[in-house]
Amino acid sequence: MSAPERIPALSLPPAELLARGELTVRGRIPEASNAALYCTVALDGQEAACVYKPVAGERPLWDFPDGNLARREVAAYEVSEATGWGLVPPTVLREGPHGEGMCQLWIEQPREPEPGGELLALVDPENPGPGWKEIGLAEVGEGRTALLVHADDPRLRRLAVLDAVINNADRKGGHLLTAPGGRLYGIDHGVTFHTDDKLRTLLWGWAGEPLPQEALEALRRLAAALADDGPLTARLAPLITAAELDATRARVAALLDTGIHPEPGGEWPALPWPPI
Image 1 (cartoon, rainbow, N blue to C red):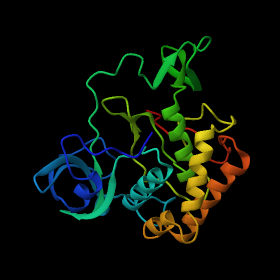
Image 2: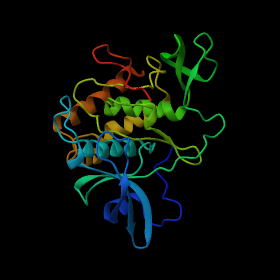
Image 3: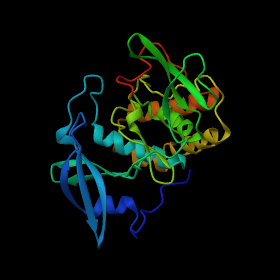
Image 4: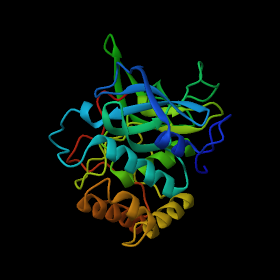
């Protein structure tokens, strides 16, 4: 995947529109655990929908005492951009009606999934079928179990690599968005970049398997960009701590050294809850 395209019918790059446009709150996203506001952003006659998450609306997390969710969301976007895969919607840090927060382009979801485009499924435990990767057994009621699986999809595989780099502690199924045309995005990256191994994800299907060549190439790009004088280092330094930046470098180096997708470590729950 290439870096994000410009928004259809807009001449401004999305990040510029998000950073400089007039932000107007239209409503609150009720299912969000922290304050998440549905907004529009307008500049020079251009307008787009976005999500604004003010730092003032964040609930403290005992296991993520440093920094804030908003800055880590922006940091995840910067790492995604540096891979060249564009897996995170354009995201900026800016002032808004409720103070500093992250502002992210709204990704409109198709009303109906494209045929054959399912990313997660519950299937027969004895016969998951081709094209699926096992996650684990799930209770489906009345004493019955089914096998929760994710698609063996190169888009998800790229996201699994990104999550390993940013140490995503909460990759749920509801954080996977498919834009019109089939482009995949991941959202909600506030619990990332911890110095301890906290990877929790539904995307364990490739655990222990060799990383594909495109992933190794992306990791090499990241390693170069994360050098002391690298461009990604300069962008991340205001967003995460020096220790978190060093830990990110170490994770990239470890992935290149082993050449395989990481496996659950056993010291932290491997799956997020709830998973979807």
